[in-house]
Amino acid sequence: MNLSLENKITSLRLVTILMLFYLLGYFLKAFFLFDKSFIELISSPIARTITSVFSSIVASSALLVAYVHKDQLEKIIGTKYKVFKYLPLVMFLFDVMMMLLILDVIKSKVFRLCFISVLYAVCGLLLISIFKALYKQEEVNIKQAKAKVEQKEAEEKHKCVCGVGFPTKKQLSGHQGRCKIYKEFKNN
Ligand SMILES: [Zn+2]
Image (tube, rainbow, N blue to C red):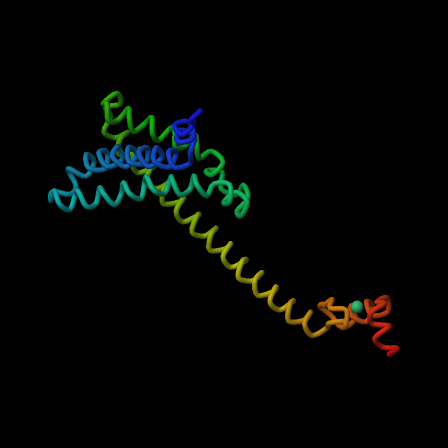
């Protein structure tokens, strides 16, 4: 039986494509709301479109990046930022609110303006937190790599004739007391 269709349906590639569509939808919804809200503030259509495009890119990509890095972020920063724990719920609520605002179910202008302000602020907070966490992680990685190199150098310095290396001279002497190869080597 040819399962190529089934394999395609369950593939990561398909999920990625669908995720991009979802993200595009998120972007368009956010763009619509930002553009609508900037009408009275920014009279130039070009300036308004540019502002709305960048605002919605930030809003949609911040949510995606935060979601993709969610588990890693929780590991790095712990439960300090509750927003990561509730991220799926936050994304869901934002999505529902955007749809309700676009479909004019919620007509209040004040609510719309408050909502996009909150949306933008949360996305900004997410991006800054992600940057901070990843930067911290990178620092830790560099430190670990450096420590590993230093340990290797030390082991190279304190090496027994049997080939085993040790971080300190004391540990090498301790090993040589028990090492048969070293004893044979010494007796010859
Ligand atoms: Zn040895």
